[in-house]
Length: 193
Image (cartoon, rainbow, N blue to C red; front, top):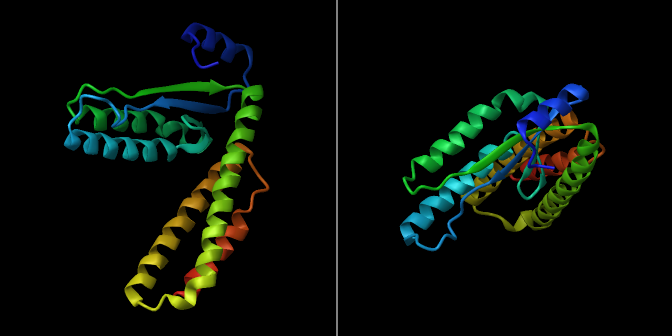
């Protein structure tokens, strides 16, 4: 599925004009390589984490290293991939990320969307559980600096889930508990005022 020659991909694209979404498949060098010093491992880890965040800013994760790119982000793919390559290049360790962008056809989109949906449902459920635990313990958090830090984290989490919801809407992944999660985040944030 992923290893297609460009000729085959172009032929398939011209045969079926239903390609509206792209998938991004990536393999990033990690810090687990043997001959790296502790300092280099730390640098590689930081670049890998930053690169992963950049790639995930393009859409919804379907599997460990496959992202369904939101239609509104297709124009940003080249810029993000270039930034990831620059980050690894700046390490000066001869580590090269492998990022491939492929067209997504209707039958593939159905399969990958169901995988993405399962991942998003899991993320939402985990966040709902964390917020419910926070809400049940909120009265025990008395230190104002801790309350401010938690409020800031909640606001960042809210922003991330709103973006994820927008990506899911663009990709036709619907009927998820985003609204309930956002209302819980808002409730916790207001109780921390």
